Length: 506
Image (cartoon, rainbow, N blue to C red; front, side, top):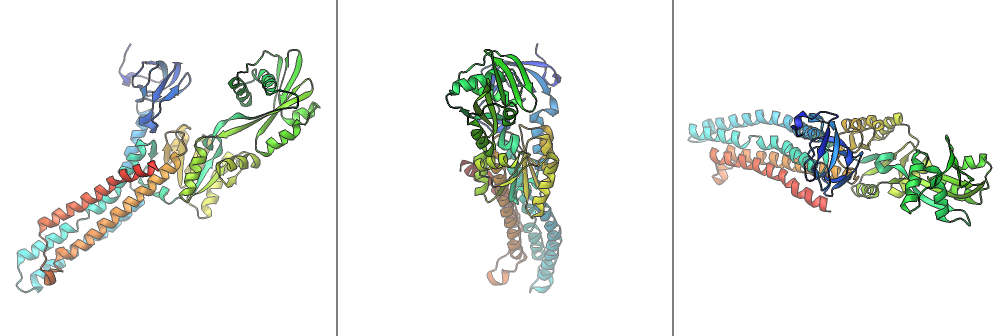
């Protein structure tokens, strides 16, 4: 049964056929496909979707078919929110625009005064005064000094800048956000879920002497297959990736805060942290030194024992996102300082920071303390951007001079931010800041040109050069020149597209 898209409500199940445009935001409940999300994220490669994946209205389905359950409809969809944000951004004023408005508020009365003086001089002071010539010069001054270009200088550049951002998956809330981003000198990253994947992965498999890697993984995966702990899921996934399937166990028992134990082929297996092995008086077989090394690297170590003998240790860590190190490098090349904010212990935080090239680490920071850390940085005279993705990041995003939310994060974080990245690629952070740099440069060029043009045109229109060169400006030519100044300002704003394209290619 087909129904109009505006009749779809939350909870409805919708079948999406190959090649169709997805009608509304939802979650896949059956089937699988790949979806072209380039209109939302700027990412050219199709994104694989399976049961449980989130899909967005107006994106294009690939060759597979699936059924989705509608989660957001109408004005609540991602596309509708993007349109609303872009409209608000393009209608907003940057602080520099308000400065231009104040200048224009003074400039216009001054120009009227100059025009009146011009009329009086040409009618009463010059030899052989002619009323029409005095009037024409008066009109020429008013026309040539019309501050149209000054009024267009900022909004045209802001409109082009926010539009370019939307095309590249960067949602900028307004001209003020662009201007603040231009002044940034420090970028603070939340660690978990922002710089890292937000879930543990197996990094080290270290068997004891005389034990094979395959044997260690098989024993560990067999015990952990019955657990729902994140480390257990990561371990089982790593084992299966190497072609090792868990074996059935008996009498599985989770040891809260320590690990787990179970029977495997009639033997007692225990998995857990070094503290558990000490409590159960297991024979370490030299593995405790490896566990200590893993801990010094900021990794979580899980020891595996069989019949009272430790047969190896497995290391876990929350792996950095593939784009994290490159994003940090690009920010540093732009002259920005980077800071990592995390609730993890100092050793883990330092280990991740070393991988990514972040020297300034603020570790063991509780969610409620993140805002205080941002304020401390601001008290040092820094202009701070905060990059985060979770609900607990929302207060810090609001407290920062610029809040940057990862689009794959929570709606609360997105609402609290000034810039939203519609994809998880962290290279979008330096891209957004670079866009603000280029936009502000264009705005300043426009304002300089508009003010310089008006300042130079007024003396010509007033006839200051007439005694020396015989030059007077006809109002018709003054009108054409005034219009050309506006055209130049708009053209320079549109030039931002070319400047930005070159910057992105680099």
